[in-house]
Image 1: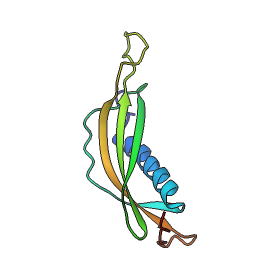
Image 2 (image 1 turned 135 degrees about the vertical axis):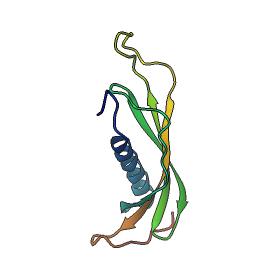
Image 3 (image 1 turned 30 degrees about the horizontal axis):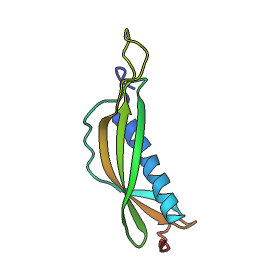
Image 4 (image 1 turned 45 degrees about the vertical axis):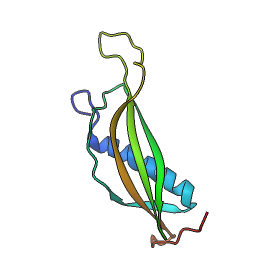
Length: 114
């Protein structure tokens, strides 16, 4: 946290977890992150805000799953304001996470067709 805002690294970590959950549910395998496309932060996340990550599987390869992650924030009233959530969500950032299914030794593993 820096000046009442969460760091970009924290937000990326939450997005990575969301991508891993989506890829694991899709592939039914343990997965690891191998790439993250360009991420541009459009709005900050303040202490007290609620950060939500929404996922969509956009591409499936032989061993990989590409997951789009949209990070959005619901704002909490600021100091001196009523302690209520404001309506709607704001986009924080989005990114494309490439996850690879791995076996027990950490080697890439083919994803079974759905």
